[in-house]
Amino acid sequence: MAPFKKFLVLLAIIFALNNADATAATLGETIASLAKANTKQKIQTVKVISASGHDRAAEVLQALVGSKLYFQKSDRKVVIIKKAGSTYLLIDPLTAKELGQSLKSKLKKIRINNRIRRVIRGALGGLTLLSKNPGQRLKAAEAVFKSASAGSLPTLKKALERETDEKIKAKMVMAVAATELKISKDQVERLAAVKVLTEFAVPEVRALLGSLATVEKDAEVKEAVDKALSDIEASLVFWNGIGNIFQGISLGSVLLLAAVGLAITFGVMGVINMAHGELVMIGAYTTFVVQEIFRAYFPEAFGFSIAVAIPAAFVVAGGFGIAIERGIIRYLYGRPLETLLATWGLSLILQQFVRSIFGPTNREVGNPEWMSGAIEITGGLVLTYNRIWIIAFSLLVLGLLILFLRKTAFGLQMRAVTQNRPMASSMGIRTGYVDALTFGLGSGIAGVAGVALSQIDNVSPNLGQAYIIDSFMVVVFGGVGNLWGTLVGAFSLGIVNKFLEPFAGTVLAKILVLVAIILFIQKRPRGLFALKGRAVEN
Image (cartoon, rainbow, N blue to C red; front, side, top):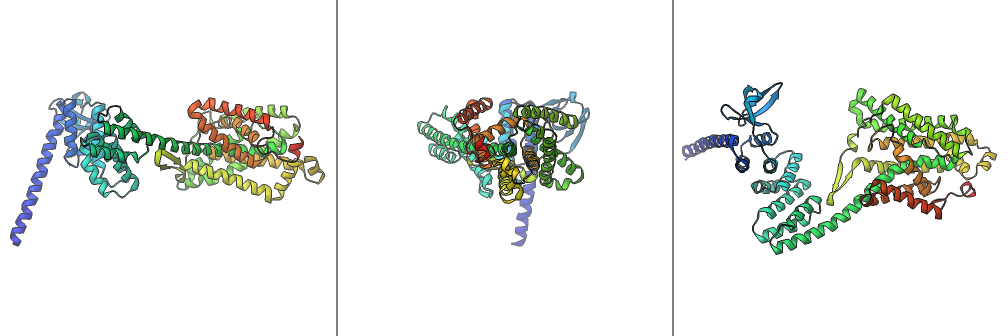
């Protein structure tokens, strides 16, 4: 029996080799037919190439959809081209071997339309569903969901059985249901597909069911689709609300960082500092300089650049703040209009100063790897890591500032000056010294806000101007000099803005918020949380 078994094995090998050669020959003829095929024939050819199982099938289809599949005018041989200067390298589609080079005038592109492209993308999705790369499998599942190609269904089900990644598995389940809903004639199977899709409340499924609802002829399936659409819409509204709250808290955290320094200087000294936004901008440019140093000298440690930029921005912006207080502000105490005009003029000087050094264009500030990416939640809700970190960072800064003001001697002096300046002075507190350091502290926190803003916004000389008005609104609404009021005011304004923007637009939303604050101040002039002491007396 042993010789007979060896004979059978040898026969199987010979048959496999012959079959492989036959498959290659058949695929070669199929590819060659693209040179003279019409749209309908090209679609059929794409399906045949996809179903062939050949190792080069994906490469051929990628070349076709990427406009790199040509044929030679002389013998109509189909080739993949690769541009090399003024000539084109010719590559055999089946073997990937170079066939020489040719001028463009001797070649003709195999043209395709959007209909063929959709079929190709679906076919490519089916070919990469079994890839070892998770990213490729995810993209393939998404492509198959969009194309809902019948030819990809067997491979898709096979890939689904062996998939272990839950996120990719969910995409594959969606793709299977979408394909069965589109191609199946069995009512029970289609109803089951609708039920499966109802579990995925995402915009893509809503769009698919929405387009199907307008053309569906089966009354029972149409009823199921309409109910699924209603359920998905309700779920999306809920998750959209959660997303607006997150975006509002994110905006509020930015406003909190920008306004908390202003709350300190405004609360202690009563100074309307119109250059506060420029101190935020200086912190952002400090981050840019620190990152440039890391890129040039410590590229492997770039992830630590933000940790260095935070104290650097605090020191630089704080130094500017102390210089401003000692050089300008201290001569204008008790003269709010002159202080406002002086700091407004200073803001223009600082903007031009930065333009002279860094230029007027935006500067690139990168996100460290640990701040890149996002968490994707059902309902299409995406929470980006950089905004999550900024929310946590803003709360940390506020917490540290409250501890500093309550647990240190300087914090006690600041609170004494805030509540009753004459009495604090008579008790031996150097109010001028407190004013200078307080202004420096508020300016340093503004610089730290610039570090955070650099991670989500463009770094330019006009960066601070976009937040100065909102910062004043937060301070006035929350209560001048009150940090808890600043927190509540920042998050409240941020959330309200994000809920108004979809209906009123960005500009009108800000106007409505401003009008609401003006009306609120008419009823509560000291804001939500008014300070006791000097603030009440004034």
